[in-house]
Image (spheres, rainbow, N blue to C red):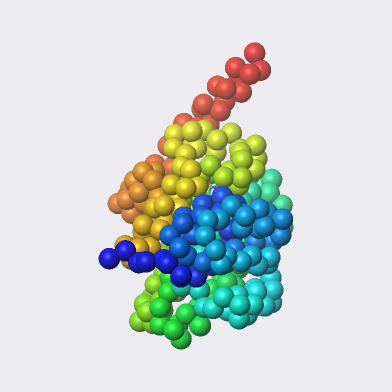
Length: 277
Ligand SMILES: NC(=O)c1ccc[n+]([C@@H]2O[C@H](COP(=O)([O-])OP(=O)(O)OC[C@H]3O[C@@H](n4cnc5c(N)ncnc54)[C@H](OP(=O)(O)O)[C@@H]3O)[C@@H](O)[C@H]2O)c1
């Protein structure tokens, strides 16, 4: 039977925008109480006002700051209780050629995408273990299981989320706390709009061959996957075949990626020549 969310507490980092906000709306529609976490208070207040139902709260917090996350968790647990679901959706990206990305970007993406996820798990998992139930849902990306051209900084941080979550899954299995990892494809959110002009031409061309999901579609598949007890959640068609092909081909995946990148380079050159003439 599908888990009833009525009265349950769902904490969502990155809950003021995109996939996190779409998830918040869907679980709130089902009667869950939602705790929204993000840095900007105004965006959180806007998001809060858009949620159906009652009993939701906002908690402005930078997930990259371990101490701030501990304080936020104490406040959430004092005011709302121990979350039934903890969703780590807070994330940032920055595409670009490796040699053009400043080293600070690599640190920043690790701080938010990887350490942010670790901090939030550290802060909530012990109480969830004590209760013996709950779901931890970590949002990675297709670029978190495939090295996608143009995403050295982002892929590094999202692969780290995968490695962390795989191990967490094994450790939490006997405790009653379930773990899930989500690998969304390109999704129509403010993050995608921000990164679009920063993508190298090859990355843009590679993305053209894939589809685009809405934040609601990703949120729906995530909730469905959690309810079915799936550890790996692959929203939409592209992540499913990419996951299958990469596992089937093993190191042959690099051969396939090289072919796709070479094709993207050729198209980029042709487009460049056309624009110049
Ligand atoms: N969109 C895509 O194509 C795509 C594809 C695959 C995976 N993903 C992943 O899905 C997740 C959600 O992405 P999205 O596209 O929904 O992004 P989004 O619309 O840009 O939302 C990102 C959310 O994270 C919050 N956030 C960012 N940095 C934070 C920090 N240091 N501390 C706390 N909150 C922070 C933002 O609020 P503040 O800025 O106010 O803090 C916002 O609420 C991310 O992990 C992303 O990497 C996205």
